[in-house]
Image (cartoon, rainbow, N blue to C red; front, side):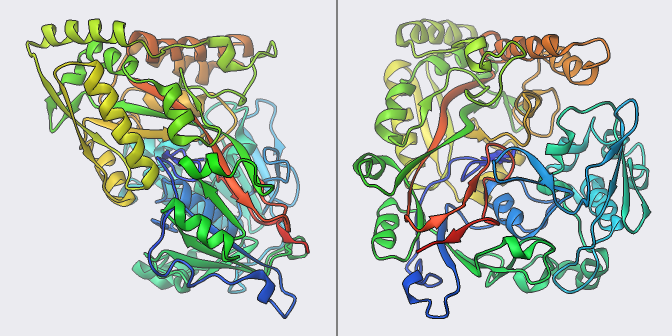
Length: 562
């Protein structure tokens, strides 16, 4: 989110992130079909009208890998913990109390509260066991299962590699209301990890009764979160969240209904907002700049970072991007400051590294981005010299590369900008643009069917490892044939040896050193910008919680106050 997420990891994803990759705003002719003005609610019920940046690709928790799916899941499901009203602190969800932990910090025991699914079934410890086993079972090909569980939950990596069975995963139902989780080693961010959608429970009896129909639309699902999902046909550009009367904490939920419409055109956002068909909407480009003086204008900070992924091998053939100097040249050949200020114009800032600012501090209290400094900046002169060196090494005078990106208005503007900058500053380079729908894009990324991809990542949990593990050799999220043994060793040792020979100070330094290898030495990716979100929000809308990691938003505590 994730993103374009994750926030979803995700290609953020990941997302992760109103969109894992590059979310934006647009609509079809029926954009307002599911919206209603809050002034028309004579019943006194609190109704919120909002937008999303893309359709929901899936509502199956172990198959999701994007910010939109994770955001929807966060409203209608709940794990052992959920992120609280401060946006970052894990609070009790299905867990009735804080878990007990053994002496070596590897066995967590959770007591579950008396909670129900929307169909009346009790939420049990087995619902978690079933869900987690489904996520790690190789037969299900979960895009996030091995990535999120491997090296965390005991035996997950071996199960993903088909060396052990799903039944050997380190999760056990002691009884209906007691869940025991065994870790591979101490995980400092484990409780925040439990807020992530991959770890939500699933009602086994209901799911098996539905078979392949499960999660195909909102009528073939059950929910244990603050809201239920309705009016979603599995592919449509609108849906509704309705207050869940079976939710254990229903008294905290003030909204009766949330109408969601997918809006991709920036002008449509303004039209819907001005006609009271949207209470909350995302601004981009010239609209973000024009509305800065509007009292409803807000800028939401976000730790999602966007970058170019350089695919070094496509269709089993080495690409020109297998050359380090070619990658370095492209990384330096575009003015990312100008892109952030003139094209995005929403508070986003140029990124010169993978780790975001205002996300984590070192043990000494310094922001991690400041601690590691700018690792790659715009330098057209140096880019040209490296480009010529790289062309000579591969024996070519011209290179054509495809840029895979999104189909939104903002994405297309940035693509055109990148194409112009790269072709101008790197003589002999031709960039062709491919801008398919989001689902197609995810599929092409999975198949490593691209040259350069405009991608991004929103953190899944509060730790640098959520970024650094993306680029480990053979990792589920790598998908660009990047490999550096020195990078792998730093990231893996920092992660697996923390508290067992590696101090917290050393952990941070190892992660910072790994980032330098990834960006400066190898130019495996080219950072572009750190996201900010410009929104219009009606003054009567209160309590929407923005999360810096995991799902983007929580509406559990939102309300309409007039």
